[in-house]
Amino acid sequence: MICLSLWLWWTLLRGSCQTEETWPVILGQGQPCGVGIEGVCGANLTCVTEEEQASATGVCTTPLDTDCVPCTSVQCPPNRRVCPGGYVTEPCGCCPHCARQQGQLCGGPHWSRGYCDRDLTCSQITGLLPATPPQTGVCKVLPGHQTDFLADPLCPLVAGCNVRFGTCDCYSVQTCHLAFSYQSLEDCLKAMKVDEYYWIMDGEESEDREEMEEEEEEEEEEDCTEWNCEVREGRCVCGERSCDPQIQPLSEEACQDLLLVQANCSNVTCPELPVPSCSEDSILTQPFILPGSCCPLVPALCTCVFENCKTPLPTCPPGQQFKNTVKANGFPGSCCDSYLCESSEEEEDPQDS
Image (tube, rainbow, N blue to C red; front, side):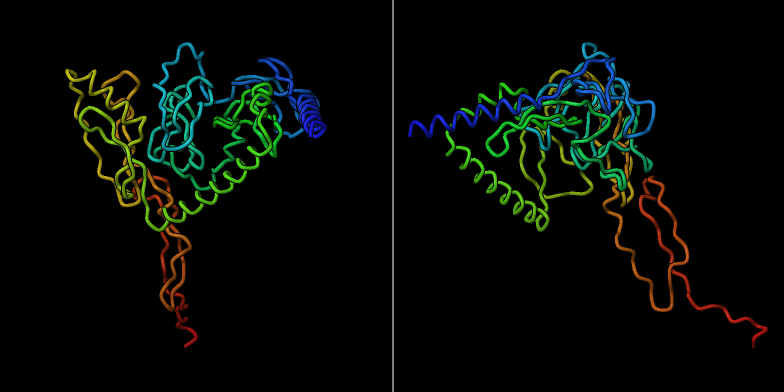
C-alpha cells in the first residue's frame, strides 16, 4: 500500500514537471511576437502584425480598434454575485462584469457599455455589421459574424490552468470570457492534492450536469422561459418568467443599477423621452445608464432581431417562382429579405401566333 502511494505521488510530480516545461513565456508590451518567437503576449496585449499572413511576426500591444484607455481612469460597474449569462472582462481588460445579454447595449468608448455573452455579437443598432468602438452597439445574433468566444481577436491573450483527466492543463487563449479555474500552475497543483476517488466522482458529476443541462435546454425549447428581475419594495426580485419577444428581460446587473438610481435620484427629474414603436421584426433595446448616473445616456431604440427571419425560403404558389429578392438592410421594418413570387409562364410572342 505504501509503495502504491509513493508511486502515485511520483507520477503526479512527474506530470507537474512536464506541465511546467510547457508553461508559456509571457511577453510584455513592445516585445516581438509571432511565429518563431517563444512566448505569448501577456494580459491586455495582443500580437499585432503588419502583414496579414499566418507566418508574420509582430509586436505585443493593446488590441486594435478598441479605443482603450488606462484602467485607472475607467469607472467600472459594481460587481454582481449572480449573472444571467457568462462573466467577462471587456477587451480593454479593465472591468470584470456580467456579460451583456440580447437587447443590451455594448461597446462604446473604451468598451464602457460592456461586452456580449457567447453566441452574441456587439452589432450596430441599425445595420448588418458589428459595432466598432467607440461606436455603441447592441448584443444580438448577427448572421455571418459568429466568432469562437475562446479565439476573439479583440480580446487579450490570457493564460491559466484547468484540471483535465486528473492533471493540470495550462495554456493560453485569446478571450474576454472566464476560461480558467486557476490563474497559475501553483494554484492548480494545490487543488490537485486530493484523493483519486474525488476526481472520479467529480468527473461523473460533470457528465451528469452536462446531461441535465442538455435536458433543460430541450425543455426550454418546448416551453420558453427566461431569467428576469424587477424592483419590488426597494429590492431586486429575480426569477423565471415566460418569454416575451417584445419585452427584454431585466438582468440582475441592470436591476441593481435601477435600484441604485431610484435611491440616489429621487429628486432628479430626467427628460421624458418618447418610446419608439418597433416593427414586428425588431425589439426595443434596454436604455443605458452610466454607473452613478440618474438619467439614460442612451435611450431605448429599435433594433432588428435576425433570428425571426424565416428560413428556409417560403414556397411560391403553383405556376409561380422567385423572380426578385429585396435584400434586408438591417433597419427595423427591413430586417429580413423579402421574396417576391411572379408568374413563371413566358408570355407568348404575338409573331408566333
